[in-house]
Every structure is written in C-alpha cells, then in structure tokens.
Length: 401
Image (tube, helix red, strand yellow):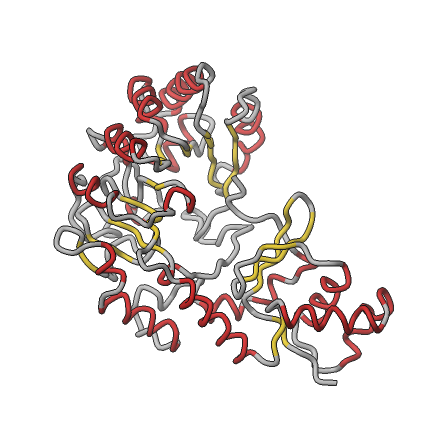
C-alpha cells in the first residue's frame, strides 16, 4: 500500500480546546472526525510503511480508516505526493486572487517617538525611507478604490511602521472610513492617547483599538519602549478611554496588549489582573506572542508560530506617501509594487511588479537578499516546518483576539 502524503499547507491549532485544521489549499478551517484526525496524525511525519496506520485501524477499524483516507484525499488534506500538493495550493491562490486587492494596513505616518528594540523603527538605521504624514485626500481616493468586500474582510488597520496618533488628522481618517461603512483599527501607544484624542477617535467611529502596554511600571515600560513611554500617563489615558467606552451604546473592541518579552514576563500576572478585569464586555487584556527575536536575549518568541504567506495573491499595504508594498513585513519599502499618486490600485495589483513577485514565489526563485528571501512565512519554509506543527502538539492560534 502506497501511503499518501499530508499536505504541508495544513496548520492545526486549538480552538476552544479542540484541534482544528486550517487548510490553505481549500481555505477551510474545520474540525475533523476522530478517524480522519488520527489518520492525519499517523501520516504527518511522512511514513512509508502502512504499519504507521495500525493505531488508527485498532481504534476505528479498517473500513473507517479506508473511508477517512478517501475523504482526506477528496478534501485536499492528503495528496499523492508533495508536487501535487504544491500545484493544488498555487492553483487555489491564482483562482482566488481578487481583481482588486484587499488592503491590510494604511500607514498614516512612519514617524514614532518610541524606541522599541523589536521594531525596525526603533533600531538606529533600521528604516532608511523618508518620514512623513499621509494626505487625507490621498486616503479618500484610496477608499473609493477598495475591494467591494473590504468591510467584510477585516478592519482597515490605520498603522504600519509608525505611531498613527502623531498624525494631526487621525480622527478625520477614521471618520472618512466610517462614513463609507468601513471599520477601522488602530494600534497605538497609550502614553500618547490623551483623553481628548481618545474621545475624538471614539466619536469618529473606530471599531478596534489595540493599545500596547508592555510594562506595569515606569522602569520596565521605558526600558522596552524608550523614554517617550510613561506608565503613569499611559494608565491615566487608558482609564479615561475605558470610562468613555463604558458609556457607549455600541462600543468598539479594545485590546490592551502586552508583548511577551524577557524583560516584562515577571509582570504578566499583574498586567492581566489590572487590565483583564475591567468588567467591560468589549475590552480584552491579551499577552501577545513575540513575532521575532527578543532584543534582550536574542532568542525567538517562546510560542511564535510560522504562518503561510498568501499576501501577494490577496492583499497589500499602503505607505504614507502612496507607495504600495506587498505586506506588513516590508518596513522599508524594499519591494514597491506601484504608487497610488500616479496609478489606481487595480492597475498596481495587476502590474508588472506584482506579477513578477508572484512569479518568483510560484517558482521558488526569489533572489538572494530579496524581501521574501529570508521570510519564515514563505511557502517552502512553512512546508519545511511541518514537523513542528504535529496535531498532537497543537497550540492556540496566535492573535486569538
């Protein structure tokens, strides 16, 4: 009996304590019947001997295992070989590529007073491109070009490599999107979120605020974020924001977030106790896994997970000056697909630079030093990390909020 191979483009994770499978080939995220799950687990590491299925046969019987194998093949979970899985994934990406891309992030500014060691903005020389503020007129032109289902895709993230609260018209950007039925999100530092600015953003209709608070005292917060981060001011600003949220008939989601670092891990319990018990239904305290290297230890985040990149077939990020880049990991405009000051979004998405990027990723021939060259989310690296994602060791999905 020749055993099939499990698609390397599956990601098992826990949802409400149950193992579910995120299948990039089909786009489905689903819990599988016990027999199918046990068969997948048995095949996960690529055995060639049918004896690997013996535990599943003992638990469910020959007929159930044979039925599970057929169902897994028809649902794109297992394939004859890796090459067939690759072709299936690439065909899905092309078939589902929208005519106009979704927009993940819009950078209101790339200026920031913080000095975070885990962010390119906070590392000297980490960002070489000019700094500035997006013009509101450019933003409104972009809103009129978005995919018709952008509002159902995800909130427009009005941030990228900078502190959006520095933009003097930040509430006006939120209001323009709200007027078009587009939900917005801002990720901000609470030291800068004055009561007046918080109220203006709430009045403008922001639908999610992610507030980064990475320490529970002045010393820790300044050590992580730099001298512009002040815990006492941040705490007062957050309390004022939550007091206003408590009065709203339709309040936004507020995520008070601590990034899990060696320097603040001793304050995790205090953070959750202080900010996780507000009594407000739309407010969540969340300890976020570090996606990258801890600046103090040089070690990767303890619970970081590799994701499968599908961005070049799905979405883009817009920089403050109108240039369009492929994803949120392009901090310094390394791969510019086009410029919204001279081109419409649809033209950029279907233009030569975007087509070249997709062709390079399809063929696995990304040049050395390219933005995507060292990315752990590339298709080949995601597939190679498959042993680390065995369903018997599934963990909760990151960014569960």
